[in-house]
Length: 291
Ligand SMILES: Cc1cc2nc3c(=O)[nH]c(=O)nc-3n(C[C@H](O)[C@H](O)[C@H](O)COP(=O)(O)OP(=O)(O)OC[C@H]3O[C@@H](n4cnc5c(N)ncnc54)[C@H](O)[C@@H]3O)c2cc1C
Image 1 (cartoon, rainbow, N blue to C red):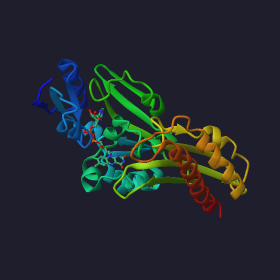
Image 2 (image 1 turned 180 degrees about the vertical axis):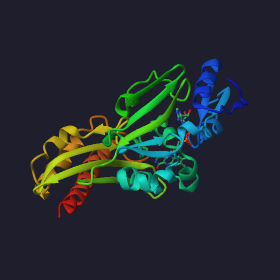
Image 3 (image 1 turned 90 degrees about the horizontal axis):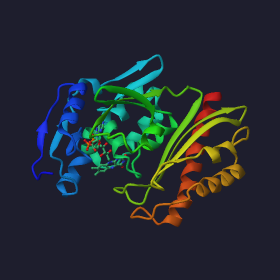
């Protein structure tokens, strides 16, 4: 532990993980610094070495390879919002990035990889990535592995940012007949979200054919809405079903958060409201594709 961290700037991802291995505990990866620097400035974290990965070419760029987008972990939020490939193939992710708070600095410097590794329950990017079945490439000394994001966020021993790097995120383009939605509720303009929901829906003959939903910012972990979504299949999303669905989604929140963004009772109720809104918007978009 040191009050004055040393600074290292590796030239490749492979060199970065070798460096991390050599430095051992106390060394921390820094990308855009939007998460890390406030922790350091407030004295909550005292790394011995900052390993700056912000110029590593292997972690940059967005490519479409046969309908799968490969997004470098260093892609900043502004790029996720504006990039034409992301807007066309993954509009849900682009929309979620556009609703991230914190202003220009966070959008211009905050990275996709840093947002994932922060795993903050109130943040916006993990719920859409889960709905889109994102896979994450992880590099540690001597090993590259690719794993579903859902598995990565429940695994605590990966050492992301200390021994291992997220290099790229892989996402299959959303099929054109799917509607999508990202909805977010905040108590004031500058606040973090009190509830959010990411959804994709496909319709057939006015009825729900397929759907995915993840609810965020209401409990420590994102909530998979699969159990509630199941009841929608083969049915139209009318007002009656929407009401039932809202109650079913609220019931999924067994351990609601109780913080500055709202008390637990309200958060559970808002989980239902935001989930209904997201599915409703996604149904409208999917229905419009059918015409
Ligand atoms: C004022 C403010 C408001 C914000 N509001 C929102 C919001 O509304 N919604 C939202 O979603 N987010 C919000 N954020 C969070 C912001 O999106 C994240 O802080 C940012 O994306 C983190 O990226 P970074 O590159 O700056 O991470 P850094 O601070 O550089 O790193 C964050 C963590 O990730 C690790 N890390 C970084 N990159 C990698 C990698 N490739 N592989 C392994 N480990 C890595 C670091 O070691 C560190 O532990 C806000 C932040 C601020 C400061």
